[in-house]
Image (cartoon, rainbow, N blue to C red; front, side, top):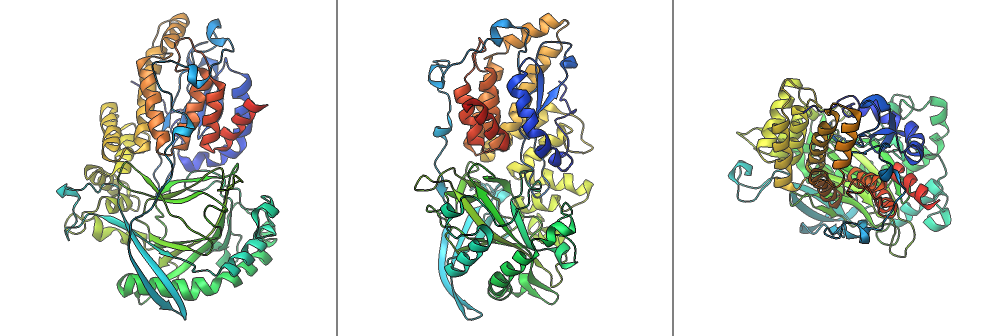
Length: 573
């Protein structure tokens, strides 16, 4: 079985910029050129020549998964379209989700699990830093790869590997938060501001998932060197924001330089944060916004570039937004949301697997809008990157034997050691490492490994078994539909190809793929949600190709992807 690499395996950083250019035009093509064949990248549809299979037949509908900040580029899934040759399939037949295949209960977005809130706080203490009294809520969560009762996941000190997070309620006074919001959107009240901002936020692709970043840097290496905040910004464009940047820095510096820096150096101790020349220092500072109907999510990732990350909420949970920051545990890749109100801060290190998902509506039914102030600290007085050292000890099997440390160390290693450490992390039960190794065996990620589809399948299944990893389910979709596609393209004539494609409608193999998409969607996988919309748009789940635009539109909206929202708009027009 051949796994196509023509479009599926373009590395994230090479196609990020194409997302913002192609998405709008591509979705229009999807709406009006159904007989053609499409390839989906990151949810963006790209027209593929009909000569792919010599005429009418299958199309590939694949969506690239999340690319983690630690360098993990996950895979793609594809859907089969029987094409334009079958006049019965081309009929504009529709059905509601309730009337579809009566033998199966179809998942709809309203079935997705409600948010689970983080409840792993183990202590509540007080600490005085620079004259400010801080309440400190200390919490822990099992890391991916930590499986209770299995000796190979127990560290040298006989404890299961856990990640820590610290919440500091009310770190930033609400009066200061109000001033910050006034500067950013003209009014501290979101309804009065009406979604507007006083300056244009960055719209470049985010390094984690390629989504528009919607952020403003207050401090980073480039700004300290007298350059624009990002290479994509011309200097004269960034200068326009300099006055606002300086006002925001005056409001926040006391808390970043004095309170937070002092707290981190005391909390993590001199060995981690206080050695000469290696004291914890705020090296990056930025403001970021998530808003319903715009950017709503940040894929699960590790902050591999940051020794300690601090996120300060500038909005109230429930009253202004719902959802927000979540941390991921080994328990079925469960997302645990951390409730943060105006001024509350949360601190964590690179080993914490986390992400963001802002729900559509806040408590009163208005649109969710979440603002946060983010700082990335490094263990260097001069902001040098010592990341290659951070995970050495805890990854060593003679020391920490920590699967997450193995996984993070792999991303700081050279090519030979990268594969070795990912393999060790996978063997220790780390689901994301298993997914990466699967893509290495599929030749998606560069390696000396031979193409081995069976081994990739085992690794995807291992990721599902250990943590119900959404990307494991998504990988299985890729393999199942590649197998179905192979059965079509190997037919000797166009007519036989078309017959094979029609036979795949609602077939056991396609239904298994849809079931995996549903499991990934339950885990919050936005590209799985988008592809469920694609499947119901084309009727891949029905033997007669009957389509359900209503159900498809619900999944497009639930994905929160720009392409999904546009596809939803096409349904409503």
